[in-house]
Amino acid sequence: MPRRSRTPFVLLGLLSSEPMTGYQLKAAIERSVGHFWMESYGQLYPALKQLEQQGWVRGKDQAGGRSRIVYAITARGREELRRWLREPPSPTPPRSELLLKVFFGKFAGDDVLVQQLTTALRGAEQEVQALTGLAQMVASSEPDAPELTYWLLTVDLGRRIAEARADWAKHALQAIQGEQ
Amino acid sequence: MPRRSRTPFVLLGLLSSEPMTGYQLKAAIERSVGHFWMESYGQLYPALKQLEQQGWVRGKDQAGGRSRIVYAITARGREELRRWLREPPSPTPPRSELLLKVFFGKFAGDDVLVQQLTTALRGAEQEVQALTGLAQMVASSEPDAPELTYWLLTVDLGRRIAEARADWAKHALQAIQGEQ
DNA sequence: GGGAACATGTAAGTCGTTACATGATTAG
DNA sequence: CTAATCATGTAACGACTTACATGTTCCC
Image (cartoon, rainbow over all chains, first blue to last red; front, side, top):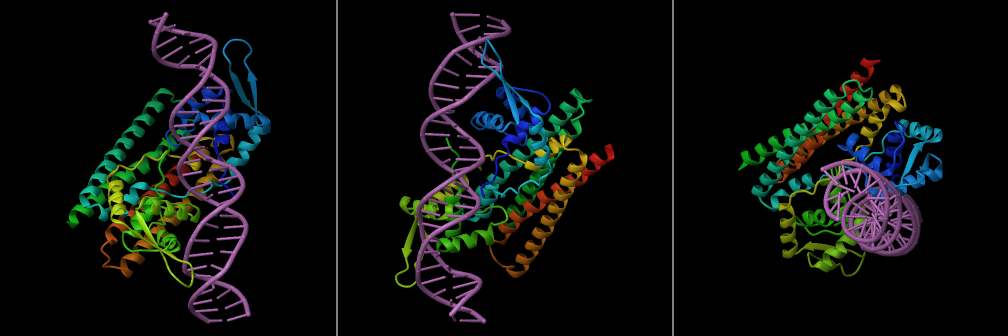
């Protein structure tokens, strides 16, 4: 059984707050869940059409002017979103290219590995910075938004994982260099 | 440009140690890098054929008896592996279904979210246990293997991230339940 | 007038999983 | 003899990315 796409549910989730066009949905994804989820137009527009066929959203062609289709979630759509939210997340097969390069590190020499780990450390530290900054910015600009708690939680997991990666990279560098 | 498959390099990496059949490679992947990487036969066998066409591995048909093709890495293959090991890992687009469910949690009710987070906490704790046990088992059974350091490092990142997820889940549960 | 942003979509191609098909060998 | 393991592969399908194509509207 092929793993099911979660694109429809991202769209339903965002349309639960307010009706939007496909283009606006793309922007909303980047703004709100962009730090842990992304969609391309090639996924988004076909998914919207399918959602409409299923009756989970309704699209209104804006008459006159620029071509625009504003999509709104239906009662059925809300129901299906709630059903999906109750399901346990399907386990993602873990894949880390960095770890592959660590594991086979001996075949390229420890200097290469040190280089990779240093870059990874920098990257992880930058991500910690970026997510910390993001959280502060949004928390101060929209301190009363009701969904703020949930949003902050999503940023927090990203930050904790980035911190774990940074700590690990430091540890790994010590283990490699200390051994030489 | 489409993202390049890393399957060939996993195979090259494992064949760097010793020649193997496709079937043995599958088992070796599970044993060694299975906690952060997996391959299916549907990827593996075609990849081996392509690697042979490129001259990065050489396959020897076992004459007589059961049909077996033992693959060995070539000098060219080692070169290409080293080249790949020097390249920075291509950034993986982050996708977390759990975070999606947290972010849209309000649409299903906090009780659903608590359920999801509790399951996630249990899962993360189990993973910490499993990886800790794995590290101890291998470290004690093969204490002198030269590649042990590298292997332990890969397990360690997994463990740290699982710990971060567990800590986060606890924090999230407090944030949700404390708010009610 | 021109460039940025708004807006919708498709075509081609890769990646990857799952399920199926087939058969030989070995251990009990 | 028979079940597990060893062994190789393919077909079908779905997910996803990238690049392309096209046109409008707003702001300077």
